[in-house]
Image (cartoon, rainbow, N blue to C red; front, side, top):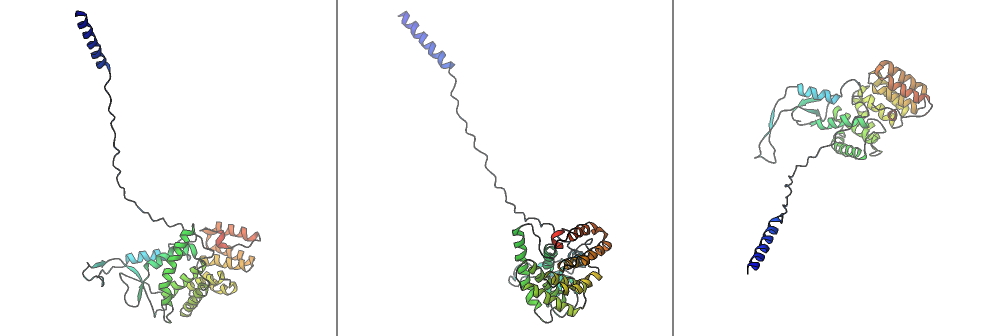
Length: 309
């Protein structure tokens, strides 16, 4: 009996020691991932690429006409105007307090840009149009045009189409203003350069000729008409208009004239024009040297394919 009790106690002691020596079972802790916060998606409009030609063809060292007009608009006293939406008579009224670029539609034979908050009867707000032209001219003022991508070119083309649907009907009026016609001429000229249609070249020239009838030998119109004729293949006809622009001090007309002579295979006249250009604009000597080197090689080059302002 005594042995049985001892054996029982020994067995229980062994079981107790075994139980105490067995490590406890570890329970897995499942870590839940932190909830993902919904971050807003920010769409950034791609920055405009650099212009290939100077934005101011009249003087490369000065800001463009658009930028000058922006300054003048800001400097002109603003007459605030309160307007309401006729389609929403109960909506809150809008206060206009920033000057815009306003031009007359008809019966004006000279530049008549004014700064006001709103276009009135027989007027057109051209702020966005002039802003667009300011950039597009730096890429498509001459042929061939220069864009960084097909998408960029298509975007400019579509915007130009939209602008022409506004300008062309206004330019058709026999008494269309100088300001309307000059913008319509620019638009059609650049549409030609963008290969938007063969009819745009003749249309641009027709607008320019109407402008010259208003203001014979106007340097700005002479420049655009000379460039249009030259790059459209009418090289001989372009000479007097480019000469007028050169005499008036329009810087880019020298390069257009040199380009015109190259296409006429008059290398000597092209080089003389470039030399005169370097004398008048010493800062352009490096450009002139590069062009003359190409011209003297005997190859036939387009000036606008060789240089990048």
